[in-house]
Length: 373
Image (tube, rainbow, N blue to C red; front, side, top):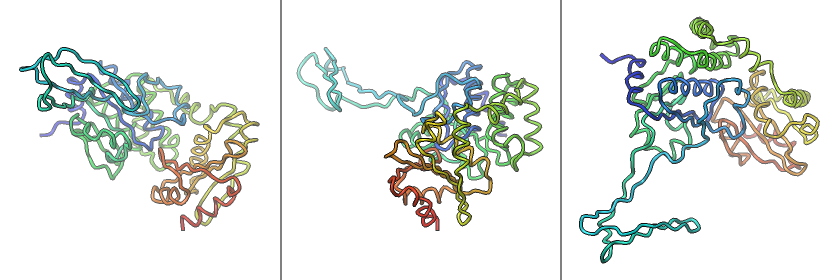
C-alpha cells in the first residue's frame, strides 16, 4: 500500500540537505506565500533551501510584512559542477592553470612527460548541489519557464515534490500532492504540514493564511469552501493574524501608490465589445504622485482584482515624453499570446509588455480589438 504524501515527505526530508523551491513564471501572492512557508518549514528541519522567484518588477514587495527567506534568486545558476577528468595512470599532471579571455576560458594542462592523448580525457557532469526539488503551483514542467528550459536534467536526476491545485496537472513529480478542489496551494501545504509535523509555527501559519486570503479575496469569491474556512481557522489558532494580513493586502498601501492609483482610475476606459479595461498614464501622473514606472504592474493587478467583469486589462504609460510602453494582463493565455504577436511584445510572468510609438499610442486599443477578433 502506497504511503501518504506526508509520510513520503518526512522520509525524503530525512535524506535532504539542500532543497530547491521552484515557482512558475506566472505567479501570484498564493505562490509567493507558499514558497516562503516551505522555506521556513525546511529551515526548521535543518534543510537549506533556495527559492527561484523571477521578481524583477517588485511584485512581492507588498508581502514584506511576512518573514521573508534570505535565499531568493531570480534564476537558477551554479546548480552543478562539470568535471574534466584525466587518466594519470601512465602520465602524471605537473601543472594546471587557467586564463580568462573575452568570451573564453582556457585551461592549460602540463604533463610530466611527452604530450597528452585526447583519449586520456573525459568530461563528467557532477551531481546537482540540490537533493530535492519542490515545485509549487505548476501544472507541468514547462510552466516553470527558463528553469526547466535551461536545466531539464534536474527533473530526472533529483527527486521532485509537485504541489498544485490545477486540474491540468501532469503529476510530473515522484511525490504528487495535487488537490483540484483546494482554494490555493497554501491550503494544500497547510494540510500536508499538519499531517507531516502535527504543528505549524506562527511564522509559517502567517504565510499560509496570507496565500489563502489573497486567493479567496478575503473569503469572498467562489474559491472559498467550508474547508478553506476550517483550515484558515486552524491557522489562526497557530498564531496567524488575519487582521494584520488584511491590513497589508487591502488597506495599507504607500501614499505614492494610492495617488497613482487614483489618477489611473480617473482616466479608466472600457471597451464592452472585448471586455477591455484600460488607462493611459502620463509623465505628469508619475511626477505628481511621486511614483515610478515600476509601480505600473502593481496598479494593473489591482485593477484586475477590482473589476471581475473585465477580461483584458491594459495600462499605457510614458516612461519619458518620447518613450511609451504598455502592459497587458488577461486570464486567457491564448489571447495574450496573440496580442503579444500583434504588438511585437514579450510575455513574462503572465504579463505582455510592449513598446508604443508615442504618435500611435491612442490607436493601441483599436489594434488590440482587431487582434482579439
